Image 1 (tube, rainbow, N blue to C red):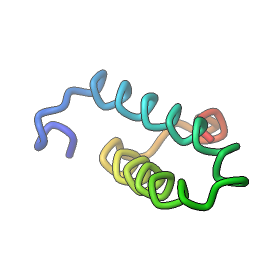
Image 2: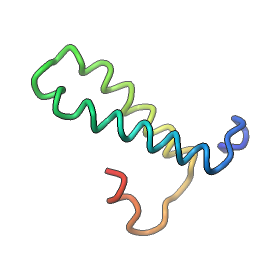
Image 3: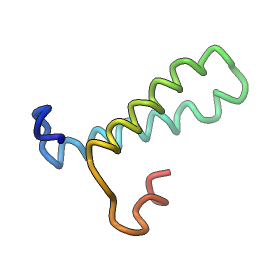
Length: 66
């Protein structure tokens, strides 16, 4: 599916890593500043979409991404 949007596998992996890093950046701040929740939720949703585009992950890889 990623190819339908013009991404190759490496680009899709890089996008997932970037979004994962942003999710981690928001994690501590979400607990103390509720105004960031909307932005953090957008990154969470984007991460899920990218994960769906990439297809199933090899066994054990999911725990590395969370």
